Image (cartoon, rainbow, N blue to C red):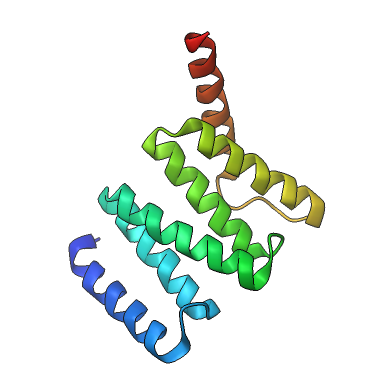
Length: 131
């Protein structure tokens, strides 16, 4: 798709939601996550990380750790950190996500197990190489 063409539209939608609904409304947080996903797809990992962290913090505050949308935010940030090479950070978040899913009896967000397996294995290899 036309990621460059989509970005201004995503930003406009987010701006409108912030102005009309506030920074912590569920729809605003969805727009924040959507823009983060777009930036990640464009390769702007730092921009995506800031948005994912904002969405996660607000969702934890408003919905709690066990809400499905919070778990999606944890997974999004974990997979982004994996893409950035922060395997320890990714591993910690993805394990946290999966442990919360076990507690609530839910299904893992799309690809979480695969990301955890790759991130966990890579982090373990990196730790072994450093020792």
